[in-house]
Image (tube, rainbow, N blue to C red):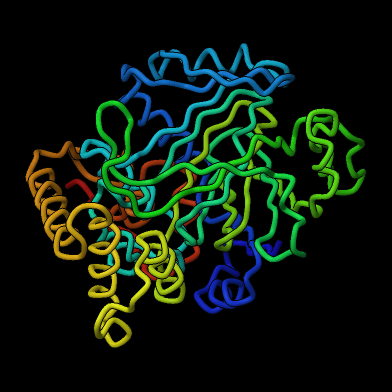
Length: 401
């Protein structure tokens, strides 16, 4: 892992790490107070929402879905989850009512991360775009080992608690990943019964649990203390050594496309993860979409199209698979975009009043020196002071007659 602290998170360093194809860790770019507030705000807005969380037997690996409200689950999983029996929730975070709180979080992410028009996933219809995914996990919980079919890089941000990631690299000797015995899961639009209507790619998943067995941890890094259950999966001994990283609140792992990843909660934790599509990785993503669509012949003039037009062509090919070909796919794409416009017109809840100049939360105070800069907390005041001090002019005192 390449580790970049807040002052080292420059566009050049970010691009260099991406070009090397190595995972990297970003630290100290956002305050823990903001992250804690953000999680509380999510519970305030969505705490009463009915969710389906995954309940797992850590010994057999048997999984089941259970229903609860988000608020009750977040509270219970802190008390009842352990390595033998654990639970976690994963859900898309793209609803209209989430737009404002997501914007606040995005505004506090490192500058080099693509956002807005820089992220080409933002021009995909919301129904098929990879949405940011919120994860709430109890202590000992581990997700399923997965390799995304999107062929896109992703980031995973630890919001609260502590969590680990294990990564199996994309490039390794032939046959080394065969013990994973992967199965496929489509990504796209589904009907009410969960059957896929339109798909743009397929993810690969494995039942091999890289955190199943406890091992002697490294006395220096305190990592590599877990491994696969070789009694259940003896072939897993042939797997290449996984990279492992420990994430604390406010730390983000950026992972290259193509690798396998699994997360483990050292303690009850919240995290958010998202894929992104910048100009460097766009062609690889669209090639995967076209391959999934079975587009063997090159689309006329495709290589000379601008990026946005390439996105339109690739999605039309994928959506038209089994639905009238390319022209049918364009009709489906137009309908999905129409639904997005209708949702955009819907009234969105926004924060009232003035906002903190640093993180965007509701402001509670002002800079004590200039009395102009709006702030929400001492944490944000400390974060902005090195820059703000250059322009901070003491407010004039009014002397009563």
